[in-house]
Length: 159
Image (cartoon, rainbow, N blue to C red; front, side, top):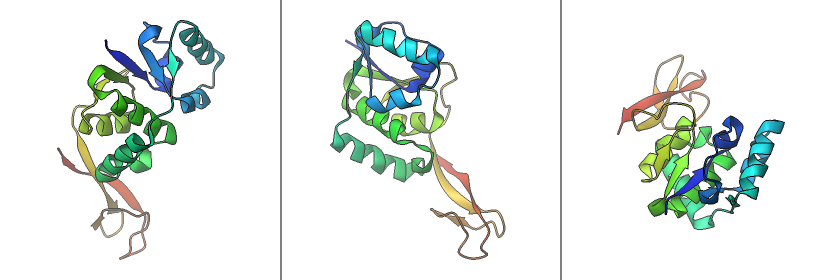
């Protein structure tokens, strides 16, 4: 049986088909701001969708990969929880998300990803920081230690 791990986009866009195979995490509820999204979520729950906490050891693995790719700055705690839950069900699930940082980390973790309304990412990427002043590159940080200018996220390489 294939399960579907649902990011908030599933409920926001109203793309719920088979709720009995749908799993999400509690923090997704906090991202549902509209009445339509909340109604979609409630209907999914009534039809068999499950809300589960992610396992702590899976959260650690997600953090390690997100730090490696430098996507950690772009992931919310909900994104991390969704990734951890998808990793837990890795062998029998697809992650439903439109978030490109989530997709990048998920694919590197070997998680199957299916977009909700957007296109899939086309390349797996590693990121780094580049100074907007002196153009030197760094692994992390917000301010250039050489000239004091802000650092901007840049693609380091494709995997």
